[in-house]
Length: 178
Image (tube, rainbow, N blue to C red; front, side, top):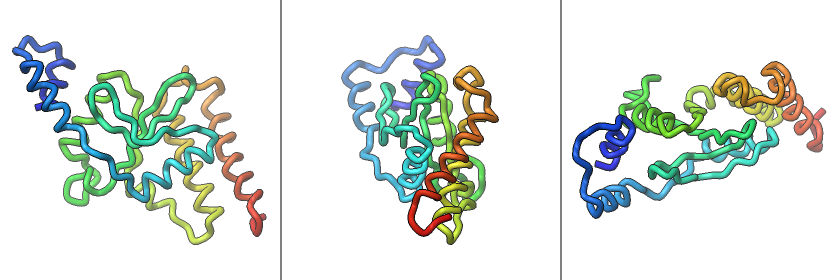
């Protein structure tokens, strides 16, 4: 019912609102305790390696829990790490709940960076330095194309080069890596 109420608010529908007490109970039931996945922790770590400061498990005013929020170009960006349960039957088609959450977050003004599990898994490598660089470059590209151009103080190409250089420099600073 809470998501239905959000839909009514989003649409400005003339339907009657839920009574205030019921609306509060529905919102409380909607809020669940987050359980970060290993992939989510890896994404947050990689965002930090890019020089960003992710805030984990942020609760939005509408009641949704967002995996991480980063500030880029003065704007908050919601990062959602979507595992297999966010997609229909092993496909790359988001479930109805995932689609609704994305739509309602965007309608509330959030910039959204989804990180689907198959893209993240494709970045695996046995060499930790290579894996780290792949992950940072992937997130840099995804951010560069997910955000409106004015969000960047520099052109997209410069942003991409800078993020790749940070990932590579970090790998070179670690002992045993050249």
